[in-house]
Image (cartoon, rainbow, N blue to C red):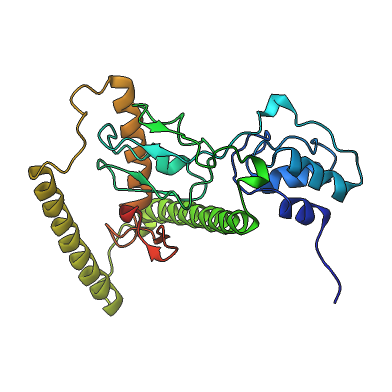
Length: 280
């Protein structure tokens, strides 16, 4: 059987798939393609460390060189930790995580699924209340000694699923926007003479969803009454609140303007099963 793998494919297979962007590219795949084209050095991946440079050098038939310090240093692998007593539920860390390793709900505490975290650091900077730390978990082990091929492959799959989901959500949002523009045009102003069976079915779905949303609101109110809510929201600065409001607006554009109002866009939860964004 003919091996159809490209050079970029082979390079990507040798990368740790942390998707940390420390190489200067948006992820492991773009970096692999840049190396294959000769546009990036093969020593720009700190998570891969010295061993990662040696693997790429062997593939490319080039000498082993030092890791480029401009991209960072080889280190023990960290895992994100969220101080839930400080978390305000803004979801900015969830949006930044490249492998969906953070779960939670808007305006409620978030937590990190340690087994899924790649230690990429990308969730730290967006956090407006500095409640995320990155403690090392591999002692003295660094680079590929701190990260296995199985972990890399699992991270790649989760990153690919997340990328595909975001693309679907964007396409759906654009389609809804186009439908609203079409509905607002003069040609679409006159309603049909009688409701069709499809219209009636859609109305029934909307009623069911509205009832489910009301139950969710009541449950949230009950949790807040029991004290299950963020603990440090009383002194949030205007700048932080603006970040939270912007995140909420983006979420609403994706979730509450669908053809079936209130219906969430399906996604995958921490176990890989299909779910909705509210379960994160």
